Image (cartoon, rainbow, N blue to C red):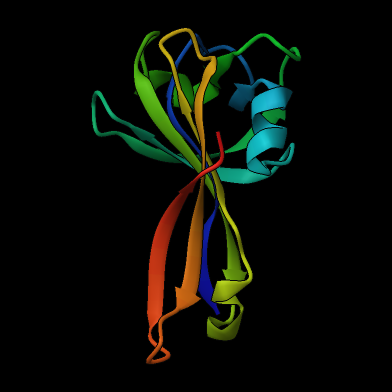
Length: 137
């Protein structure tokens, strides 16, 4: 089994940090659903501003809020306005790599969706794996 990208929120801005909350990251359900991220699912978070890398679980916030709030200990890793990458993953066999179609969302500064992209793995004429990025919008 190999751990691969399942979905990604790329360049979403942190809208808040709540140190006194009991943990996790709060995200807009609209963003999560579009990228295939489930509530209570563990995600990796990479802060583009500081380089911090953490793992925590997702809770859904208010639909349509465009929120990205780090809670509990995770609140110490980000400041409001930091750009982060949030990625979930799945384990697949090498044969299944061509079947998974990750969705990647990129964002404007106000956390509205800029682009909807997809990752595609296929085979070339010689049977070798090939990778491409597909733009949905």
